[in-house]
Figure (cartoon, rainbow, N blue to C red):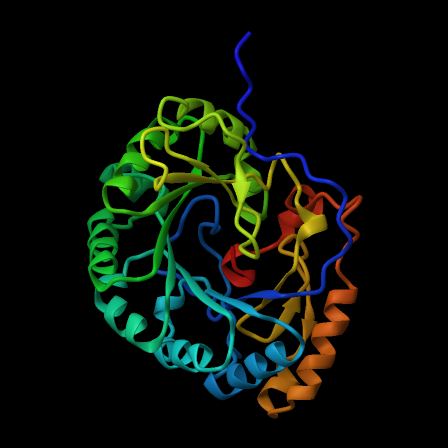
Length: 333
């Protein structure tokens, strides 16, 4: 009988953690329109976004409330005109970790400035290495721009670069080995994400490929040891390469394995709402406090938002029906 290669290890019951990490969705605008993220036509964008001064208040309040790790997301964060300044302020704020997730289309131009401003870690979304597929998945995006951005980021010398691939059956699931080798050849970490039934993603449930299946497809490249997470680095787990222990592949299995009990993450949207969970379409507004410079008001709201976090014992995270009401480009994926 073949050995089952578990992707996500069994964990014992864990007490609810205090919030320690945050995702800042600094814009809901994006220059791509990925099928599982954005609806086609009729979209509305936020008009009253937080400015740099308001974000400064938010960051101060988050850190004062105990947040230690910050990730900048969107929409596409590289579209934000004050991104480099924001990165510099967060890097100098005392946060223990600062990372950013991007689609990579503008990375070629901005990678040097982001690195100089203090950004150390970078995640780049890359669902396919086929130009035609890329254009179809993103509704018109150019793969060459993303690949140029990745190469520039490698040259600039970030401490860590990971590639995020959402695997869709019948669309790009035949590329998992190719993407793994592409990443490893450049010293990067490939990560394969299960399609989350969040927002537009709920329309593609029939294309879900489990992390378990992806690992089995990569069996010849990976060890058979248990997958392991990184301490204080979110829900991803990793398996080392069979022929080089420095190489590894990551898996994020939000559709088949809810990891809500161990979650310590909050999300803040570009219009100033704190969401205690990605699967919750509404949040607690901190816009007024942020715009008035009320750091203590932000701290109070952070604590209230965390109290509204669902019970991890029964909550099924992104598999909850309510998650279909969430806009990923607004709340941040």
